[in-house]
Amino acid sequence: MTPIIGFLGVGTVSTAVIHALCSREGDSSRIVLSPRSTDRSQALAVQYPQCARLGSNQEVIDAADIVVLAMRPQQLDAAVEGLSFRRDQVIASFIAGSPPSQIAELVSPARRIAQLIPLPAIEHHAGPLLVCPGLPEVLDAFGGLGDLIVIEDESDIRVFSVASAFMSSYYEAQNTVIEWMRSRGIEESIAADYVRSELVGLATVGRATPVAGLEDLPAEHQTKGGLNERVRDHLLDAGAFGAFRAALDDVYDNAQLRVSASPGD
Image 1: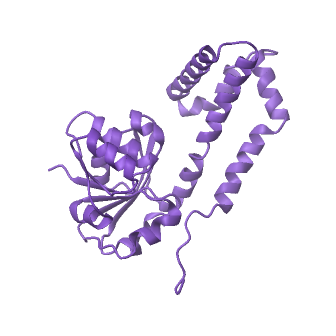
Image 2: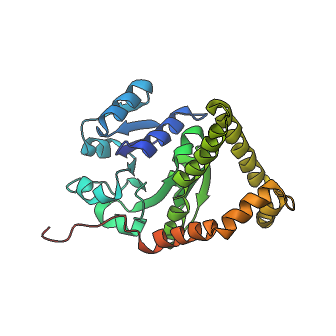
């Protein structure tokens, strides 16, 4: 029997996951949605017959076999306050920075909890989907959406969360090259087609390269004194990649994503 998946929170990432669930091959998942965000939940319920928008978060919990927590980290404690979960339910948390052990008290008596980190490309059945730990119900429910990356030690989740934090920087770099080409007289649509195709090609090569060969890719994509070498050397001399590494370290060491309410607050 196909489990019912309930979403508490229908933001950008949840919407991407729901599109992927409803468009993958095989049996379609049965999905129930909380009323927020209103526009997204209403649109999904209209678009997909297997989606139903319910009147409250508690109604979603009551109907679901797998409950997805998909609100912002800062909203989690308030959002689940007063809600009643069931012992037989599986909790799939999209909450960044809150591993299963930190969720457990909030969703008790439910005990089977997994952290998932889906990225927006999941809508296109692409990109990684981190699952920790690898609960069979979760792997079955979300299989086929992207590349399942399963880990068992929740202390590693923070590393993966930070490793996904360069998405906006990636697009900033993409758009910088497109804008530079436009400033040199290339029509923007042509520049965009060229750069985006180039990035797909680079990603394809990177994906096809064995892990042991990844370190060699920069040198393999430049020639002595060539254009690629000159650009890369300029960035190395400017400390760009060191600054990138420092930014990851700073976020890992200092980011506080969820603050639980103190007693009496």
